[in-house]
Amino acid sequence: MKQDRLKIVAIFFCILFIFIILKLFNIQVLDSSAFSADYTRTQQLTPERGQILDTNLHPFSLNKTTYALYIEPQNIKSKAETVDYLHDTLDIEEASLEAKIDLSKQWVRIEGSLPTEVKNTIEKSDEPGLKFIKESERYYPEASLAAHLIGFVGKNSEGESIGYFGLEGYYDKDLTGLPGVLQSERDLAGNTIFLGNQKKLDAANGRNLVLTVDKSVQLIIKKKLQEGIETYKAESGCAIVADPQTMAILGMVCMPDFDPTTYYDFSEQFFKNWSISSVYEPGSTFKPLVMAAAIEEGKVKKSDTYDEESPVTIGKYTVRNWDNKYNGKLTMTNIIEKSSNVGMVYVGSKLGKENLYTYLTEKYKFDQPTGVDLQGEVGGSIKPLDSWYPIDEATMAFGQGLSVNMVQMVRAFSSIINGGHLMKPYVVKGVLNNDGSLLERSSVEQGRTISEKASKTIREMLASAVAHAEAPWDIPEGYSFGGKTGTAQIAVGGSYDASKTIASYVGFTPVSSPKLIAMVVLVKPQKSPWGSETAAPIYYDIMRELLIYYNIPRE
Image (cartoon, rainbow, N blue to C red):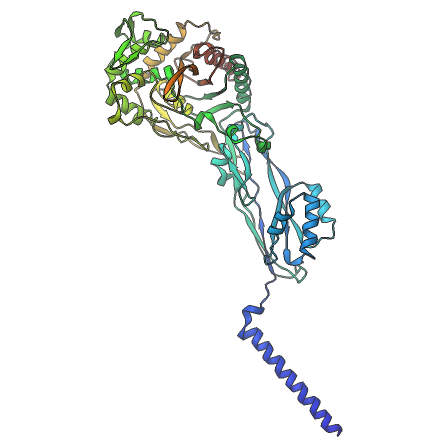
């Protein structure tokens, strides 16, 4: 009897053993995918975003340490409890947390940009499955000083950091760097196994950019431009200072502006860099460009004369001078000095519409962006030659009927005073290596506009325009300047509104070998519509301080 019971027990264990073997065979062979468990966790390592430094290595942008909160959903005690805790701690909507916490995922990003004190508070809680990754957040120590140049770092739809506008947008990939990866084996509780397999690919930090822009120049420009906008009650304004030989941008300010650190407190209209993202009719600042083309083509000479007797009628249109005054016999230099619209119609006719179109599109390249390394540039607008009417040829000769951006004007004007070299504008001087050395970029020539001989002639004509200006500008003594005013009416509803203008001035110094070029543009100044009475005084206020700052000797 006892022996029979032992046999039954033995048979039972044999059947149980066979069942276990079959079950293990099914799990490990027949249906292994359904029962496999992966205890490897992958964590992304965030690179540090590159800094943006001025030409003297003063920072325009820095990084401060913050933390991103992640959840490992499979390790939390209760989804409902975790949602309640994070709602109370981080003030995140419960519905948003409910949607984010997907229990089927290994980890989920919840919130970034958390300060150290918040991280410490959460780590002291008894909520399992809450993990942190160290991150860097953008900080702009100079606030709005170079807002439109720098841009800002915001978030995309997935909550990831991304650069917008200016340099942050244009060089986003270079500044961002490449993320790294950490793979590690975890136990059932989610803890790293000390002797487990680990693989790490370090993050590559973003590049540090060194600019051609000088913080001190920015300060000078902004101070003078702000004072001018308030004095002349302008809607907005921009000022650019550059090296006319290379088109390195030394300073660029547009107002109103914004604080990149708290960009979310401003509407999108503040982010637009007017100097590259808007086009306008340049008015009389355009006249030297057309005169330079006519001189280069041998259609006029500096000493040639034109008898300015009255307005000019072209078809059903009448072209008048800005002051409706007509001065009789004028040399080509006098036409520039007096900013004669009628005289420029004559110059344009001598040049011819085919040549004029060639200079506008192929030489000065106004129909395409300059390629300046800032996000958001738009090119100018030139009508196709086959759609020109006679009035188009006339008005374009004195800067109306076409549109350009401000940087295009500075580039083109630089070319006619630097010997005819059309240089590509740029803001980044180079990349700062880890050892402190600077990998500099070279300036780029985009073409030739006029000869050195024609350039010398136009510089002399522009110097005469300053010397014989009727406006009482406070010109720094001992220095030679060349320049040109501009006042363009703004087109509203297909016609020009004489009460709304864009007032501008572009000038350079010294005349014999230009080292600085600057342009000031005011939109809708109320105190006076004229560039000679608004933009020009601001220009000379800026230049007075820059001559001292750059230690340019008196002539």
